[in-house]
Image (tube, rainbow, N blue to C red; front, side, top):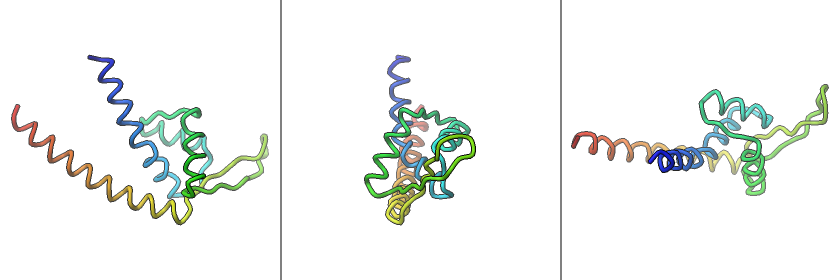
Amino acid sequence: MSSNLENTQAQMRKGVLEFCILSILATEEVYPSDIIARMKESKLIVVEGTLYPLLTRLKNGGLLQYRWVESKSGPPRKYYSLTPLGQKFLDELHTTWKELVEAVNLTTKKTDQHE
């Protein structure tokens, strides 16, 4: 049972990962390691091997843009931000998320009453 539970938990986290990353980028221009740190603070662990392909996919989809910033301690860094299309997409995700949370709360509340 525990492997099934872990798999379900992992799938649930993956489902909200894009939403969380876009939400972080909506507040400011961000370097990928800062995204990882913010996610870790929220107990949503994401690794570089997951984050970079996702950022590339979102950029290729027109939702993100980046700019290179010179670094005093190494090579230039890519800082990501939302495009206007990305902001619109995020707004739609917020609406969907609210509706989903409400539906899940209603459903699980009904289930809890039958125990």
